[in-house]
Image 1 (cartoon, rainbow over the protein chains, first blue to last red):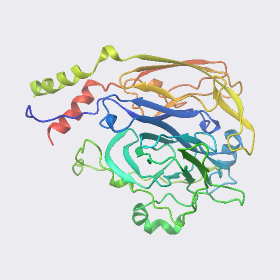
Image 2 (tube, rainbow over the protein chains, first blue to last red):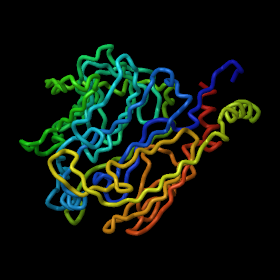
Image 3 (cartoon, rainbow over the protein chains, first blue to last red):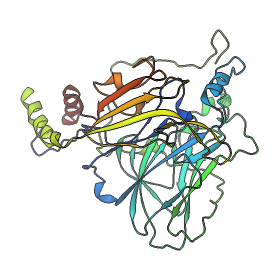
Length: 268
Length: 134
């Protein structure tokens, strides 16, 4: 290595994480929250003025002890997960996020749910992705992102220079399939055996939750526009900030097959 | 070559301001509280220090985080896991019950104590060598 070469090593773990109970599927009863490791030396430190930490989650009315006993039971051989009752932003609904015109914010978003992946978008605003799961990325523009349960995404958003309107920020639970973007093509041979993620869709289930970028407390808080199609950013195209090259072909590989099946007592 | 490793380890270690790293202590009393976040149904939820949603944990790179945890649930065990953190050298603080630790029983206490997160020197060398050779 020459003296002029730069060396980038990820010594530490800055970024967006979360913490939760790890006892018997307990955390969806509420013991879950964001964990933020701040980095004064972030490559994006000068790109924003303020940081906003947001969670998205699914929500159940029954306690996890009863949901799990029903889930892992011989009466549920296909392993159908219990369908949530609602979606939440920051463990609530009706969230209003005050924003200043012209200011650039870093949004750190974490999916702390039990089960549901969520599509996330902001009407009228573009997202510049800068971090996923604790790894800085080359900046990438997105209109919509998809977060599986436990995933995180941080993105920069520059607010409009206009305080006359407020804008919906939507999180929408994935009721159908986690096959977002280009991954659908990869799994085409297996689509016959796929079932919807939410096995039932009750009539009273609202799988969306709306928050608002609030420029003006006295302006309307409009309902989000209904979308016919969801086109999330393909995160397989993200490039790590340090542009580390891919590892070469392996010298040895091992095949491990994971299957879902039923136990001898009939539980899935 | 040993000398090359020393050459690029030392400036890196020099930029880590060890004197600036803090210890951040949380006291978490885990107990049931009541909440109705969707406006449809009031139900028991697991809060910390009588509050739900629970607090956001914050630190800077290099800080030590200490969480003094008391399980006041009464009817369930508990534990805490820090999703995404490598817990290098502190896997006994990682949280999965029957994997990294025994559960914290009702009335029990457990102190989580870890640093976010200075990688072990050997691992640092492997990473740096990977870059140096590319």
